[in-house]
Amino acid sequence: MNHQLPYGLKNNQLVSIEDVEQGVACGCVCPSCGGQLIARKGAIRVHHFAHYQEVSCQHALETTLHLAAKAIIKEQKEFYIPSLEFWDVANGSTVQLFSERKLNFEKVELEVKMKAIQADIVAHIGKKQLIIELAVTHFIDKKKYQKIKALDISAIEVDLRALRKGFTKAELYEAVIKSIDNKKWIYNRQEDQLIHSYLQKKAKQKLQQQQEQERRIQRQQERALHYKRQKRIAINNGWNILQLHEYGGVCCPKIVREKATYFNNNSVISVLRKGARWNGMFYGQGANGKYVFLNGEKTIIFPKDSNLERSELEHENQKRIYGQLHAIRRAAMVDLDKCESCPYFDQYVNDSYSKFICKYQPLNTSHR
Ligand SMILES: [Zn+2]
Image 1 (cartoon, rainbow, N blue to C red):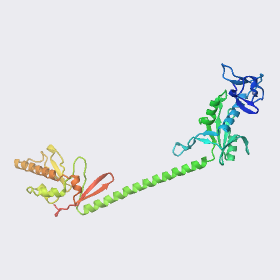
Image 2 (cartoon, protein in one colour):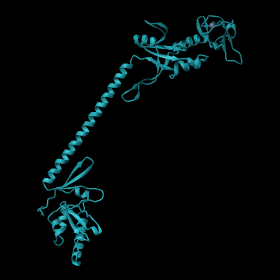
Image 3 (tube, rainbow, N blue to C red):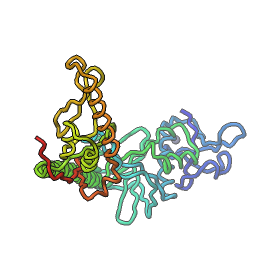
Image 4 (cartoon, helix red, strand yellow):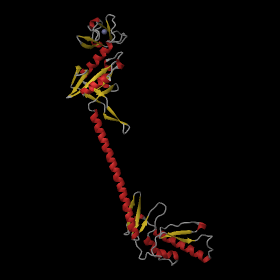
């Protein structure tokens, strides 16, 4: 058990191997057993103290580490604390109640006798206290935790196992002061309050989201109702509901009617002249015949080949009607930009798409 002791006690003060004379002239004793030490400052091995006489001193290094760690905190008065985290069960995530940071102490007391425990270190910032426990072999157990909790003073445990076989002053500073990986909160007196605040904030957010969702649904319902009402009014007034879509537009009923008057009266065109609605679309193809919807009614313009034996004259006549309908459509196809500035134009937005109401009313809407 000949660990390399980096510190010794001189006049009851911890002194580094670098600050003493070589050999027994160092005048140091072992912090653990009080036996005389010799300072070994050779050229090959790391400088260290050793017991002058061969003794079975088991705890020299651990005791020294403990003393040196306490001394460095008292001397530096600074200390990095780890973050405080909380497992949010409801949301399945870890929440940081506060982040890691550096503390600067105003006062540091060592080996403080408190009601139920003896604390390694009690550090002060104003009225705030922090217990720092240094652990090499004995870590805080449930019993000690309960006592600290009862005291209601925040406490951190510093794990110094990494230094138990020897250390330099720089390593000591790193492990005791700077590092946060080897530190953990045993108890934090603000924890409950911080969790409470977090959960309250979370609940408030959730409530706001719910309310926002309800408002959104209500707005949608109101819009749908509004649209339904407008649609009913439009239908009752005999207005056109024009729906613009990607593949085919709609025909302006005013232009359709005006254009239809240019042509000779025939059964299909005359319906349009009276103001029937036509969306400008042709349906059916080839041998199946062609038809359009006028006022929502299927109106054949080309009969099926098999249905009818057409005379030359009838055939010519149908071709003419088809041509006339094309001409009307070309003239009447709605251009939304123009449509929007039309006095007969009205628009209703139905959730995802726009519908347009054309308030143009032909003088005589009945064609039946
Ligand atoms: Zn000793």
